[in-house]
Image 1 (cartoon, rainbow, N blue to C red):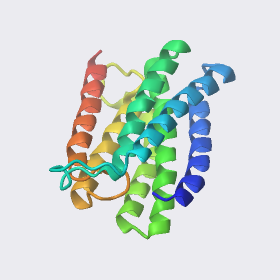
Image 2: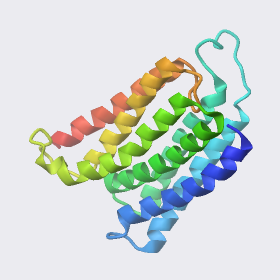
Image 3: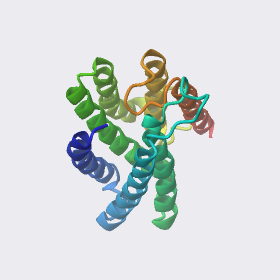
Image 4: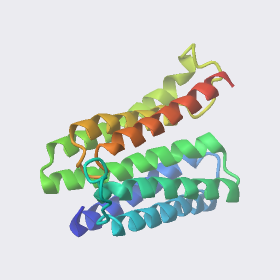
Length: 213
């Protein structure tokens, strides 16, 4: 990822994150709560990104064929954004799955801007396809939000269905693309397929438990 792509994609992506986060929570929380929560998550996310970006040149003998540190920024950003989510959740007394869905929408848009800008600059067809699949999850989220209570197997009818499905689907997309092009932007090589499989599975487990609770 070049400095040019960072300067283009991050401002747009962060503004989009703030918009989707605010739009998802504006009916139930004050603007102070919403933007405080958003900036906490973004702050932790950016710290994770910077940490991973600085460590992208690392290399471990014996792992070069399966693990590529140039994409570690994605996973460090995911880990630290999860920490930021927990901090915002407890500090601001937010509802869990409602906030999760707001973070999901904002994150999908932020990732889309990163992927699409880099796809255009590098003329990477696979990355372009992946970016389009990522942004397609946003209208898919809206569709699920309107329809999920009609699904007979989702007995609880609790909020969180759309967010969990979209997160699980996103990481499933990563599994496929990690097998096709393991050196693509944000991927850590073939090992990314394993990490993404585990992450997607965990979201499906949470969804399964939520469906019957």
